[in-house]
Length: 174
Image (cartoon, rainbow, N blue to C red; front, top):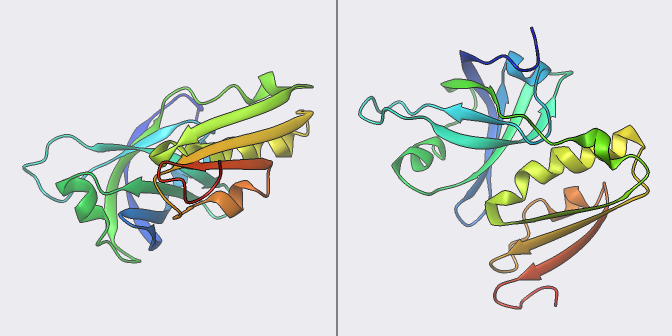
């Protein structure tokens, strides 16, 4: 299957946990992991048939060995609140992979600076990982912004670059 194709499929929640106030980390068993690239997203459908539109959620990580995608999302309404109650084994409809992804090859020989805040942080994990694994970047600095001291994903990001943290309330960083 081409990397720019998309399809709807029934996936299965592998595991899920809350990692900060209103922020959830979900791993999904899906063959879509094979074509996922850093910077892409999936659309997740609710069980509520009155909610016609799926919720677009960035791919945080793709595990091609185990056919799993990781999404990290914030509860923003009825749909994402529904997702937060899913347990391992729950079947969900998803559409993906969507979007063009980030141009990882442009990092060759350069100092790379990744910046994101809030729910814009999760897609940076796969990007930082992909850049680091390519071995092309001279260095990777990751600048992340949070509301407070609930620093979700910061330790994982630190495995791939130099993390710089700022918070809205001033509790961490400068």
